[in-house]
Length: 83
Image (cartoon, rainbow, N blue to C red; front, side, top):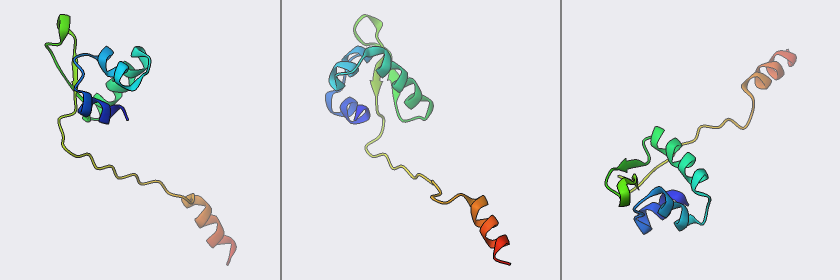
């Protein structure tokens, strides 16, 4: 939601981004820092009063999540008990 809001509303500051998603500025700032560490969001200088301008420098983002639904150790235990 935050990423899409940045793309659609083109905020001129973190505060504007927070307004776009109707959230607290400090929470949005923390989320943007995490997204910056993941190279999903970048910041440009030059917003009003020297504010950092959040941008999404991509047209598309694909995410792959590898999340096992079964604990691998449980499989090994089950196989060992079947002997």
